[in-house]
Image (tube, rainbow, N blue to C red):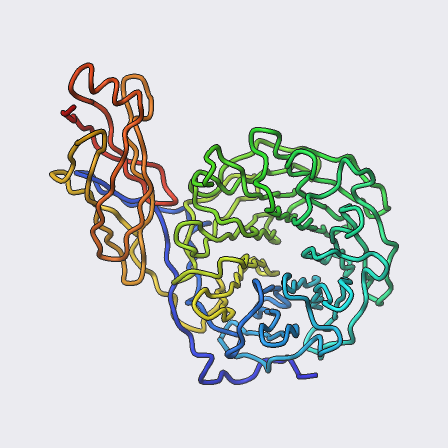
Amino acid sequence: MADLRSGPQTADDKTMGLFTRRTLLVLVVVCAVVALPATASAAFSSQLPVSGGDAAVKGPGVAQDSASSQFVVWVRAADRHVMARRVSDDGSMGAIADLSGEPSKSDSTTAAVATADPAGNVTVSWMRGSDQHVVAVRIAKGGAPGGVIDVSQGSVAGSSQSNAAADGLGNVHFVWRNGSDSHVTTRTLSPAGALGAVTDISVIDGEAALWGTAPNVAADAAGSSYFTYHRNTDCHIMLRVLSTGGALGPAIDVSQTPDKAVGDTSPAIATAGGNALLVWHRDGDQFDHADDTVYFNFVLGGTTAGTPTALSAAGDVSMMGIGAAGGPDGAFGVSWQGRTSGAVWYRGIGSSGVALGAPLQLSAGASRADAAPAISIGPSAGTAVAWSADADSAVNLTSSTGTYSPPVKVSAPAVTLAKKSISLKRGTVTLKLTCSASAGVACSGRVKLTDTRRKRSWGSARFTAAHGATVKVKLKLTKRAKKQLRSSGRLKGYLGVSVDGGAPTGTSVKLRGR
């Protein structure tokens, strides 16, 4: 197998793209940019293509095996082999290594994942296509890959994404959804290479994971493991803790009914500072998912759930998975794919469980519609995020500690409203918006007309505009608004325009018509 130590950067690995910071925006006679706290505003590097021309199946995995390098893995689309590459912060990259070979290649529906222990040893796992077993390869820090280890053996994963997390003692905790009963199932691999017992986390059918979703796992410094899953019976997001001594804690409902998950979406989990963070795709009220949102719950001490809280703009999360990671400072990072733009987004959460700043757009363009981004936080609290590009499925990487290209800071997307363009005709409000931002950065968001006296919505509409473009937005009035219009001949309210990632701002309007 190839040596994964860093080497010279080749021509086809030149840095490309940029990152964008999406903050709140703008409007009418008042324009403003919201400043981010220092903890949320660290620049990420330009995105770096790392797969050397390989297209990837699904999304990649990423782990940080030192304070200054990332280990990126992906399933190669051409033959479903599991590939890996080490990338240093200065942009130098090692050779691409084939971890699986032909006999143990992946299936065509799941991604490979990577995790690193505190010593810098990396474990890569995936579901083997030939028998649907969860298998793994270990790579000692700075060394060559070892052989393929059959982790699940008799417990078939059943076409489900598997996940893995290393604890502070060097053990790796694997999790998958058992194919025969959909129970959440786990097994450990010790630093010496010994497999632990296969353990049923669900225990009863009532705690089985929803078919088509994937359970996830995080582990802490003491060796306890934390499991989350999308419960089959009610679509609630659940948490269960397995202590170092093997005691299985109760199932904790972290989402409850109002904030339950959308079908076929999988939650993410991370631990840091003795606490746990669970993140999921919250099911909105609209049938077309236009108001689905990334939600999180900060679980104090890993056992006391807090209040489910929105993390993304409403409606701007795709149906793909969400990534979460915890750092040595007790803080967390979350990455997801936006619904309207397809871009990769990031937001930090502090050690007290409070979201930091506004969502930050990391990718210059869209990521694959069927591929979740991966996130990792290293020993120096640097954050790395990897994803597959929509255009060619190439694996891209960005890092908050990377210097492979000067970080490119671009102006936040902003929307300006042509006030004279606002008109009302036949129950529809029409207006024009112009997107102003750096080249290549699109604007998306929502226009909403509100009855300021009774705090009722009179209608809303989403918009997307390319850089520099002016778009016409049509907002259909609600039945209540039309009734008011017929009665008085006018509507008096507040017209708000928000860019994804920020709260609305706008202007008061008086609309006349019938």
